[in-house]
Length: 302
Image (cartoon, rainbow, N blue to C red; front, side, top):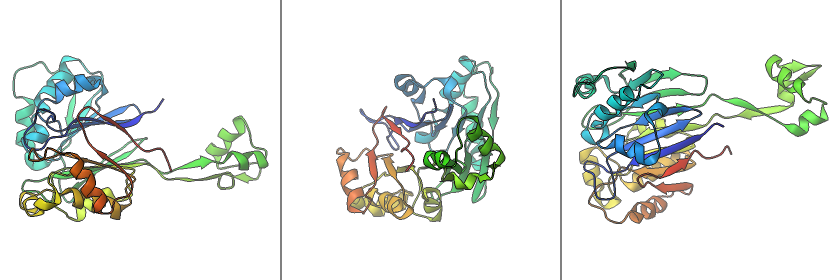
């Protein structure tokens, strides 16, 4: 059975708190696992959340501030310790290659697994095309080079049972029609409709910029930083971050179905303030204020 869900390992910005670990997010997508921004403590949070090193196929780092990358050393060593049987690809800003290499070889260990570094550069870059998705990156606006990631499933077609029955197509003939495009004078267009592929985006430390909207466009599930509340929007801009209201407006204007707010500053004790401000900003879709170790399913197809 295919599973598409987000496992949230940590939700704190800059420093962890008693209730929030540093960042860490795993997207399960049809048997593959993509780990985003492994901050300090990610290896232990994976254990608590039931995520194994074997589950990981890609690691995607948005930028090299510690709360988004200090967990790389432990995760990479765990991948090797557990002898993960497949290669693991690592994406990260090319300008931070020296940080990646230092974290990768922070201490001595025996390399048992092929780790394939694939750095990101430029304004936007296509990173991977697989049978199940396309993964791309887009430059954001932060004091250090930072990228957001977007995963898009290829469009497909949805078969229409009532039309198949009307035209007498059943059993193995359905598969033949799908493969050939037509069968006995019946075309695929007559018995099916376009099914838009699902879309996911991951946006961390950034000010409002074109890249934020480009990544968020039409997403079924958007994970986005909400470091500050709207009262502190000046601080947010100065430090290269978003407020809850800004993140929600991005989601509303981009047609996002399910919005996940995360990366909260330690200065706020009440997480409900982020939900209130997101709603006040006009986002009417499904909304989650992230908590450590929670799981958020990708919404079912509309």
